[in-house]
Amino acid sequence: MINPEFAISAAIDACDSGRAEDGVPILSAALVEHRGYARLWHVLGLMHRALGDSAEAARAFGEAARLA
Image (cartoon, rainbow, N blue to C red):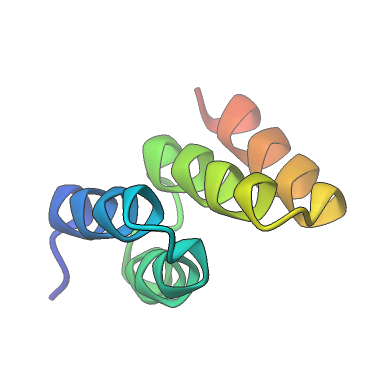
């Protein structure tokens, strides 16, 4: 089982190190087990935004807002 807060921390660390692309699979794996965890969706949106993928960022932010 993946701890969602650990996944969030690891993804943020990756993004802070200039490797946002490494954060996406970490968060995606956590979302398999924790689909209803709004903060995972929010941080996934941040990763996609950092990568310049505004469509995926909007989708993730929308899911975070729906769950919040």
